[in-house]
Figure 1 (cartoon, rainbow, N blue to C red):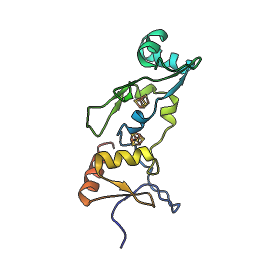
Figure 2 (cartoon, helix red, strand yellow):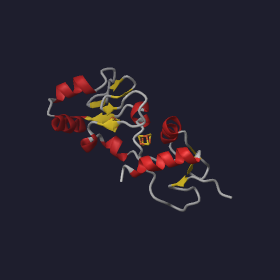
Figure 3 (tube, rainbow, N blue to C red):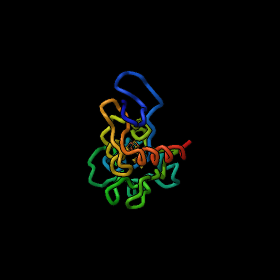
Figure 4 (tube, rainbow, N blue to C red):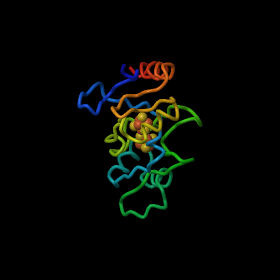
Length: 150
Ligand code: SF4
Ligand code: SF4
């Protein structure tokens, strides 16, 4: 009998619905996003602030790159991530014009960060075939949560 679970992408090559980002914010906390100057200017424009203000307020002064920057972290997470302590979801304040690195990043059952989010906030894990597994109650809860994204 197969284990109950949710399948999005499987190692067997059968591709199901793409694994959804469930906005746990782990990737926005584990990494500091890299930006080139052009990108920094674009985001500053969209925020309606000068480049210098953007650099002062939102980038990490410890980074020594020339015309390249790292987004600053506050309290262990990206300065643009809004997430209450202990909340299962966070929101990116610049989602509509977030950095290229963030747009190119996609959620996957094979990513350590997404697995960590599943475990920490939903009590779920991923088996060797990429199936999300856990108690029936936890799976139901997670499924219902995903429905709210549709
Ligand atoms: S800019 Fe948005 S998506 Fe990118 S790391 Fe920060 S909060 Fe996450
Ligand atoms: S770790 Fe995965 S699920 Fe969590 S926010 Fe990042 S991409 Fe989305």
